[in-house]
Image 1 (spheres, rainbow, N blue to C red):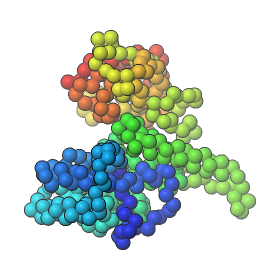
Image 2 (cartoon, helix red, strand yellow):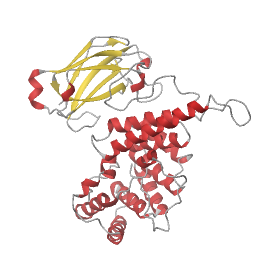
Image 3 (cartoon, rainbow, N blue to C red):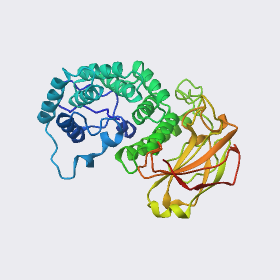
Image 4 (cartoon, rainbow, N blue to C red):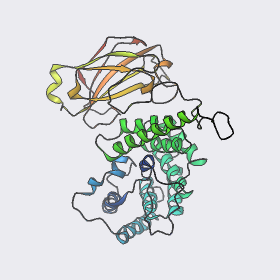
Length: 378
C-alpha cells in the first residue's frame, strides 16, 4: 500500500474525494523517510533494499531509524532527479522505474508517476505488484477514485496473487467506497492476517475492518426502515448478495458461533523435538486446502487462521468465514488437507526453515482432526 497523499503544499495534490475515515488510512499511507532511505540505497548500490510495495516498507515509521531526522522535500526531490537521470540509460530497469513511480507519487507528481508505473507494467505485464502499483497511481491521479481501469488492474493482480497486500487493501477501499462494508471488512481482515505482525498496516487494517463492519451494520439496519417515499429503504450496494453469516473475525480472535457453513474442527500440537527451535510469539498459520492433487489443482488455502506458538496446543474451527474469497471456501471442496505452519517471519507464504505438519485427507465436516507440527521445510 504505497499509495501516498501528496504534501499539503503540493500544487499537484488531488482534492480529496471524501472526508478521510479510518478505513481510508489503509490506502493513504505516506512513504516519507523510508522511501528516501530506499532511494539512497538504490543510488549507491543500483538496487533498493526494498521496493516490493508491501505495507511493511510503506507504513513502518521505525524503519527509517529511531531518532533519525526526516529528509526534507528538497533532499527527496534531489534524489528523485538523480534516479530519473540514471534511468535514462536503463530503460529496462523495472525496479528502478518502480522506485521512480513511487517517488513521484510522494512528491505529488502524479502524471509522471503514472508514466513510470505504466512503463513498469509494460516490462512486467504479469506481475501482481506492478498491476497494483499502476492501479494505485491511476486512482490517485483520478482523485482517489478506484472505479474503472484501476479496479480492472486490481482484479488482475488478485487473480495472479490472491495474497498481494496492496491489491487486497485497494480492493477493500473500493468495496468501502461503494458501501459494501462486509466485503471491505473481509478484504482488510486478509491484510491484517497476512501483513507483518505488529506493523502499522496490520493495525490500520483492523481499524478499517472494524469501521467497515460498523457501516455494514448501520446500512443493514436502514434496510428495515421506511424510506423517504414510505417504502422500504434499498439495501446498500453489494449487500443484497452478502451471505447471512457472522462477519469475518479479526485474525487470531477466538471464533464464536454461529460459524459460516461447513466446518473442519481439530487440534494442532507441536512435536516435543521442535520446541527448542521456536519462540512463544512466533506465528502459527492453521489452514485447509483442497485434497485434490494433480495438474491444475490449486494449493491455495480454502480457510486460514493465525495464532501463536504460545497458544499451542490449540483448538481450531475452519469455515467459510475464513476463506480467501467468495466461492473459495470449504464449501467448494469435499475433502481437505489440514495443515499448520510456524512462520518466524510472520509471512503467510512458506519459507525454508518454517516448521509444518499436515493431516491426511479428511472430509469437510470432520471433527477431532489432529495435526502435529513435526518437520522443517527445506
